[in-house]
Amino acid sequence: MSAAVVASVLALAGVLATVAANQFLARQDRLRKDFAEALAAVERYAELPYRILRRQASDAETRGRLSEAIHEVQQDLLFHRSWVRVQDARVADAYDALVGAARREAGQAMTQAWRTDPIASDEGMPLGVGLTFPEMERRREEYIEVVRWHLQWLPARWARTRLVPWILDLPRKSRGAG
Image (cartoon, helix red, strand yellow):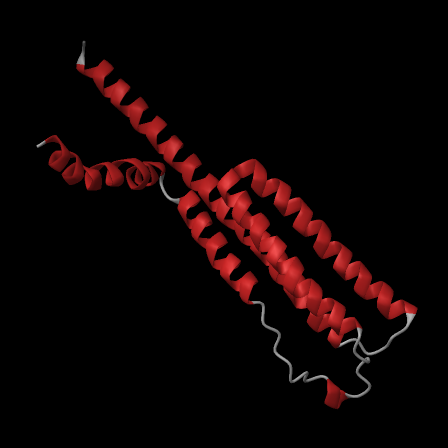
């Protein structure tokens, strides 16, 4: 084989490796952005009780405007639930748990918010109320961890799931064999 052929093969291999690496990085960036947008949809849902609490009227127009905002957030949640499910089942399970927690806690807060009187003056705008959603917070952290895991470089992920447990299990196996 001539030096020119070897050089050509090595150059082609380098080009292919660069293209593959760039595609991987571009996909990872897109996934990061999309998983973040899915999380942002949940955060918008959690903000809805505040929007309801800050309504300034209790008329059909106000209810319609708020209902439309709620509907748009619900559509976003449904879209992201499906999209995340296509990407990875573990991430989707964590996202579904997060959405479920948000619906329970923020949904209950929305129900309570609708039962309050509308704000009649500027002085009423600072709510003085901080809503807390502890289950949603816990589920958010779980979702972020699963996304972080999913976005990890595949060989590192393989090492964490296969190689490290195997290495940690070696001393136990050697004691059992002796």
